[in-house]
Image (cartoon, rainbow, N blue to C red; front, side, top):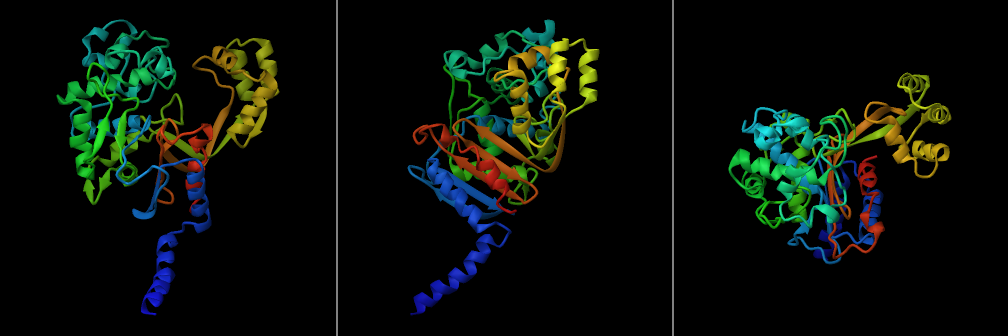
Length: 389
């Protein structure tokens, strides 16, 4: 009888503790059900630095290390913030040729560390890593030998090949292989001790992907960012350098320095000013006439892109890129509401950071569990951002 009473009392008091921070229980339950349905291996959620959910599915276990895919890039971004904190580099605007003198010629001499981090280096880009990068023996050398497709600093282009060069740069700065430096400088203060890191055939740690980490440790990285570089009351990274990672680049406002930036509301506007700019630039009349059919206000990207396709055809993106180039725009974007941040990896590996509600959430999945494209769990971010609404 005493055990029954104790269980009843615990049920009365634990549920308010678990959901007493404004987390909606129904929404949380739905998220976890969807996580199971999409073959997730782990979902961990914190609010205000308190554990809200710690759930493992299928073959996932607390001791299992899972490939973080392109979230590895965001980890490398944190490593660069460590370099700045420790004054191992003075600025992100240092030219890459400072580390690789063979680039002191042509346009490559103008490529900076910042441009590598915000994906505006201009280096020739083949997004499909299996075509060009994985067959290469030396990922750093492949990046060094790449041609330029655009002028450095002008065009945003998600570039796996270019960012692998960061492994060589960090080693030149610290004298340590990048993964060793990250283990000692970033992971050790966070209590992260069990990590694997994929190397290329030349022994360079990958930057585009390759960090295999336990889910609970993966979540610590989100907590570090949420708390502006502090963990367990200790400053690991200066707050101003965390903020630098999360500041949108001029060329694409959805990306900072190896971290994604998401806005609660984005309104697209096509007005007379847009049309006037196209005319002044000498854009073809046929293109302008079609753009005039876009005039209006759109409350979501989906609505705007649907309208573009209805006017320009089902696959207009090459036409738009070739016509607009790097300086013209077909819309004005107006952001409003709260801002969140995201590390995003292949198969649907995510760190979601919601500063407004002080939420950090991670979802991890490996290729062993992944069945089809539904397992990307693309709705995870939106569900996390709605937990406290």
